[in-house]
Amino acid sequence: MSQPKTVATTKSVAGFIAKLPEPLRGEAKTVAALHAAVTKQKPVLWTNGMIGYGKYHFKSDKSAQESDWPLAAFAPRKNNITIFLMGGMGAAQKHAALLKKLGPHTASTGGCIYIKNLAKVDLAVLKKLIAAGYADTKKKHK
Image 1 (cartoon, rainbow, N blue to C red):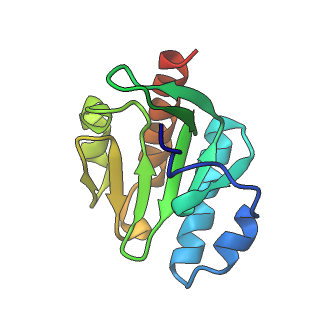
Image 2 (spheres, helix red, strand yellow):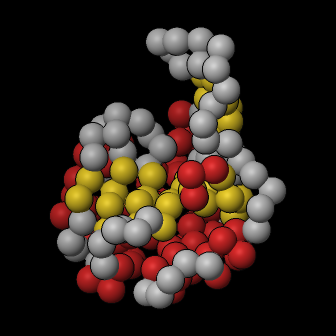
């Protein structure tokens, strides 16, 4: 069995964010603060530039794959901030009513929300989405 591509590291989250260019650095700090407020967890830098909060052990129903995965996470990318709703396929669509109130974004069927300009979205709604995704994942992976 192959090793997972995304794993927790011991690298500094603050150091990673500090190296981001503005305005991405400020956006990452804001999203990190939202995640910390919701999860009450310390952030961990994962490979692929993902910042995760909490952890659960994932075991695929369809394959022999298994690994640890964050309960809530985001990734500051060059073109957007990606918010991961860890509920799996349909996770973003499950919260369609909140997504309608969020502001400009795109969402994948796999549970990712892509935000190009954080200043144009409603941060209170984003916090509710993060909380909903976190609660869904905690419930699913007790």
